[in-house]
Length: 265
Image (cartoon, rainbow, N blue to C red):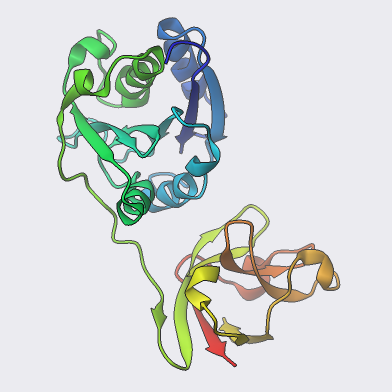
């Protein structure tokens, strides 16, 4: 794996402080040829589910052998474990708090191989480990060693049962589907846990959300007038409620957890 391995970073650190730069410095000190991709550093603080959703909709677009380093870690400094994993063709480094839930479930459903270790080999960490910045002291160096080609099994002992989040699933019946908002993006689009595949061969007649009823779907923003309230399947094939050139979250006073009902034709 020597050469320009990609390491992605996903955190809730923001970009105001120096945390991200320091993590990159640690990585480059160990694996100077690594290419670092900033997936996002704007995960809602301490919101593990938010981090899991963003990681889950992003990792598959990276080349095989990429190392995804996710640090949303409200349990830092406690007895929670850190982990490194090979899931399918990609690697993950994170606290063992559910951040890898979606890649793990996708690989299980697809019959892909999964190997996970608990990070308990301090020789692959920085010498001095703080109680509050394992992103720098543990996860960044472990990601760098993976990028250099250190075998996963050398980084720790097998971890047969990682922590997985109980992410909400829609309830689908003969007349409708009961879904909910799971993400609100920076445009104010309301992204739900209902996917195109869940509709199967059913036709969507109406969508109810926050007291509003939307008739059917549009294919893209430009198919409706500015300020129109629309529903569409987004680029990740999730049903989303949007305002053209505006914010659906603001218009509807909606947020994560808001109920969305999909009515069949």
